[in-house]
Image (cartoon, rainbow, N blue to C red; front, top):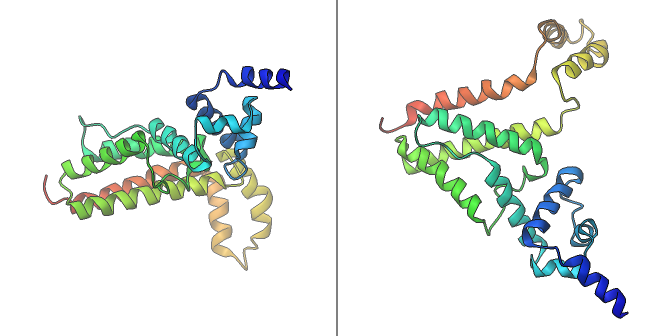
Length: 224
């Protein structure tokens, strides 16, 4: 019994909150967040499940810390550029981060105990919009609109049945087109054939939509 306890203490001695959170993110990246448990995490760390509670008091606290790391990876809007460039850069960065951490898409705005990176991020976004001349209410509208677009695009992207433009084109040719009888689905058939011929890349849709949103928001600023 004493020997087993000694081995447990030894295996837990290298733990820290940072290591616990990083390993939790690694597991969530590979397996999703729904199956993440303190017991599963402890096993991956080679530690006792109860020992993790020295570093995070609950799974909710663990999720708070994980989401804070995700926010830390997203580039903050820059002060030395125009607001559209700053928000475009931030949106592109957020999309890239969510590709790495798709489990976080539905959790970014769910935390009621946000960490420092989370708060810094939201402060920087609102500051960028307010300094650009948006009123408090309009800055809030803009923030919601941009986040809804980025998070929604990331969610759709994470669930697509293909990863590349080539895979999509092959899927259209081999799977979809045979089902799209010209007499019954003339416009779908026409679109599918044209997209394959053009080598359509759906990854380009993100910037197309983002630029439309930014352009639509520009006239809503109350001052230059």
